[in-house]
Length: 429
Ligand code: SDX
Image 1 (spheres, rainbow, N blue to C red):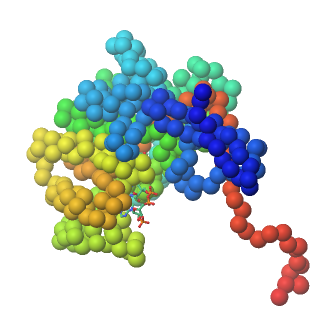
Image 2: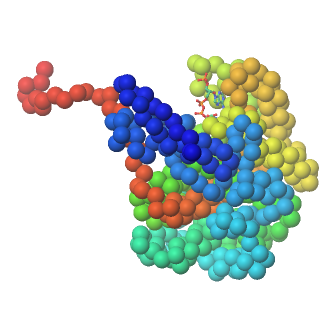
């Protein structure tokens, strides 16, 4: 007999169904709560509220576990590649070699963006933050592909839109960088793999073709894998709720970019490097900044620390920290902020304030150090996060559509003025 939750309200007992997931997570199903009791639940920030059931990503914040479609992130980061992980997330299974080759070929046929879109870039000031450019141009794809607007789209139409998005997003992102440095764009080269083509579009110049470096390719590929999905985080929830109104995929993903941009979310990787540079330029006294982070009167936070779900080490941070040492050693780079980051981590992990609140380094704490070593500028860091998260957003949007989920529309508890009559302005005191 399936378990029930009993709720006693005003002396009346209500039985609520309990849902148990494949990893034995439990939820009280409140689908009919208001209809049966007249009550709703209240949970600011949805800290205790499940928005959906999903088969894409499982994470256990207490145990520091992260799996995409059941595969541990450690194995995927070590043995897979970003395009294969993209296939896994979007299609649900690891591809055969033939399936992966066909997937890669399809994407290669769509890497160009319409020449008219180049005018959008020319309209932005060079100081425009690339996230603002990427989000708006991603949404603009819907204006060039009006069939994507049709909510009654066929499976083939959805697949074509997904292919176009996976293919064009690296181009859109790289061209946003080129715009920010006033360089001419580099067109996609179909002879290159997904990650190398992005690096080519980022760094090739008319005078000098980008030279593929396997160390850089491997490091970036691993970073993109680690960012590919993370269940119902802020930006993914945004993609799902925007898509639930039957908005097209391009604008749903653009909304995910905008949610990710915030410094408490994907914008943290940029904020971490800016914080570490401030600490270095201030003389490197990490104790001073740890004290600031603990001071309730000081708005300073240790960026890259803490997580809504992980109350143990973020498994991605552990992998990235190791990759940091590998990449900087292989590239022969010594970045002083890496030493500061390690010292900051050591001090914080032994400080009661952080221990008590279970604040550990998250995915953003070390990633910026690698991006900088790869030659990627700080204001492109969140764009890199979006490039990695794109397959996860797409998979989550597609799952919401396939499940025919209703339009997202939370309730509220009203706390404003009770009813009162209008008073003409002439009679107001
Ligand atoms: C990402 O959700 C995901 O999965 C996101 C993500 C993904 O892959 O999609 O993992 C990516 O967004 C990672 C997080 C990146 N953000 C940062 O690094 C910014 C710094 N971290 C925080 O602002 C904070 O930890 C959050 C936003 C990540 C989580 O915030 P919560 O869960 O709402 O927790 P909270 O703000 O209520 O903090 C609980 C306590 C508070 O102190 P008290 O009120 O209990 O005294 O911990 C303190 C906070 O002040 N705290 C921090 C802190 N983070 C939390 N204090 C100092 N420095 C910090 N970084």
